[in-house]
Length: 246
Image (cartoon, rainbow, N blue to C red):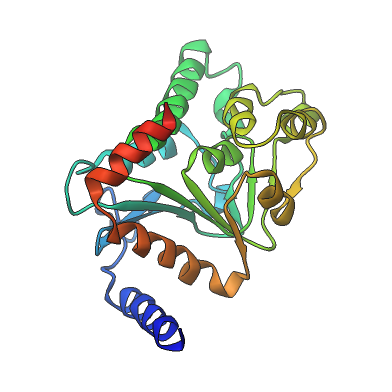
């Protein structure tokens, strides 16, 4: 058993050392803004990182479009076995960028934002490889919906999950769908009606996430799950995921 654990630990360590540098969906100079998402792939594991911590990784239209592109790139390649979504900064995602949802933007733009958001959430469930949320921090509104939409979710003990829209006059109706499928109805309704945050341990208790780990073990534990998925047959995993989602 000790030998097995050592082998697993060495495997994760080697994976961390050999991963290719993070790259965005485009090249940029020092004077240009950083890409909203970063992507890297190694040994069948694709990592997508939300990369706008100054704006609490809000799911703006541009962020959603970048996330969609990173999910779809070479999605049918045999080299891709699992996707991990994580974020820079203390906030996994604060949900929609409310500045994009003002009356000045207009209904057509609002429709485009929500349509793209729904498309991304559905893509997570429809692509043939499992998607893991690696959460270290706060996930609210559509950010909580993103966690709920993933196949597996690993979070740190400090992470919290909430749908606080009701407290500012906006009911989180779209996140309610994914969250309502992930947790019991009454738990979902309490979250939606009060906006109160759910601790990581309560999120685990009610099924919103799969595992709670110390912050210093988040990456290692998430990669261990991803590596185990990579060891399975890709067609079998794809068929199993599709069957489960029906």
